[in-house]
Image (cartoon, rainbow, N blue to C red):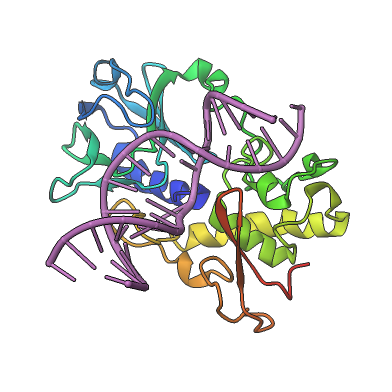
Amino acid sequence: MPELPEVETVMRGLRPVLEGRRLARVEARRPDLRWPIPADLRQRLTGAVVTGIRRRAKYGLVDTDRGDTMILHLGMSGRMRVDPETDEKHDHIVIETDEGRRAVLNDARRFGSVHLVSTDALDSHFLMKGLGPEPLGAPVDLSGFKGRFAPVKALLLDQRLIAGLGNIYVCEALFDAGIRPTREGGKVKRTELAKLAAAIPEVLERAIAAGGSTLRDYRQVAGELGYFQHEFRVYGREGEACLRCAAPVARIVQSGRSSFYCPSCQK
DNA sequence: ATGTCCACCTGCTGGC
DNA sequence: TGCCAGCAGGTGGACA
């Protein structure tokens, strides 16, 4: 669920609560999520000062003054809540600062994960080392699509080529660029790739500005919804009229995941 | 190397 | 009301 804009929104919400604060209490309520939760998480984080709150691709990063970085992934259903009023089912990790403020990781499906690594070795961690460039800021480089046979949809989801896109924003960016998700990656024309390269950061930035997209689980850290789902042009709109040409939006399944597109606008 | 699937897990919705 | 099938924002790893 949480793609780059949702993770960015969550980390922006955590920053004022955690950054610069000393961690007074850290609790892991179960031994594992997708991977084992580090057994020394509590010992290494308790008493440490949070020196940075960052995001890389769909990962949240929390740096401490002890030279450690916690790597946080929200999987499909992960949420962070700040200063929650009540405990909820699937609250797995609780972090409390010296001000008594709390950040709680809740993840019903447990596809998310928590790792703790030396900040110096962060880039060589197996979750980080294969990640492609960030799709914000600098222009997106899609030259890696050359010679590839996989559908352009699959290439955009490949975190080694571009890091941070998921099913929603890939569908939306392909619509904006007028490219059908089934097109063979290597056969997408240069001019179309240029449109796509521009559409990707554009849609991500609009989603961040809207606080992300709330379909089911996702919330901002204080419980607010995201609002970008109201701006979807194709995602989840099967059978509804294309906003550009009024043809019905189609849904197909590619490698087990839904792709939404306009059969008339997207060639 | 490249592309395709499955598995991991819970919760919700819609049909019967 | 109950049951069951199908579906969901991700992604590492197994396979041909």
